[in-house]
Length: 296
Image (cartoon, rainbow, N blue to C red; front, side):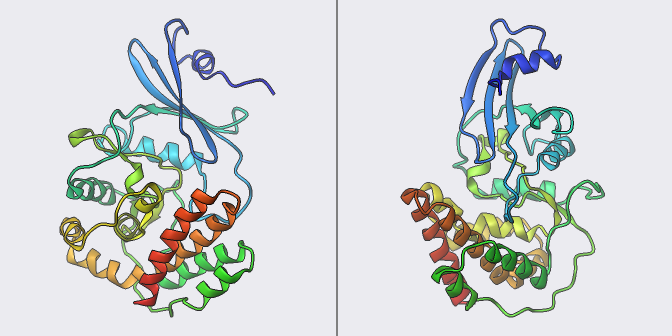
């Protein structure tokens, strides 16, 4: 198999006139993609090339078509990187997505600005039918967690977590679905001030905005990169951006989101059994969400 040349690919697809002077910089990608920054005289893009994901149950699946659809939907709305082009796997060997590069580093400002950005895409017209429909009720969320645990090896962690499974409660189904990122933790917010953007729309869907709120505020994912948990004052200020109805629904769904992420952590701990640093990071998150379940 020949080595992929991102610059030549852009040229072949007619996105750049020639390759002279084009600068290519490999970026840190995810587990299922390779990522490059490609710069020229009048463009600064990210090219993401997706690998074939193993057929296994995942909380955060790799959905190239959906990421492209999300970026198209959000183009010019100052929410996500602006869409440039997409080449699905039905046309080429591996799907390739191209979008504007977002300058800056991890967001370190007022968390209410993140809340404002989230609310803007949560309140968009959600009539687009190309997205998957996400679990919304306790029964659906628990079923997804059960599927995650079934895909794990039966060990002490899985058995201990299963004893903490919350009891199902009846909650009304939303009349209006929102566009949900599903992986909206601090590591995916880049830029400063008006340039703040939410990146990595690899597994979006239509569902309940509280999923993104819980992921950002309560999942503890920031511990994966050594950041502290948010204070209650920070959380309260963040949630004031949202309606009383949304905040009330979040309160009802917290234990179910916690159980599902705990199941995800068990899977990742097993995935990283030979990588102590990553394994320890997910053990830290698991301990935190398990504490939430114990206090529910």
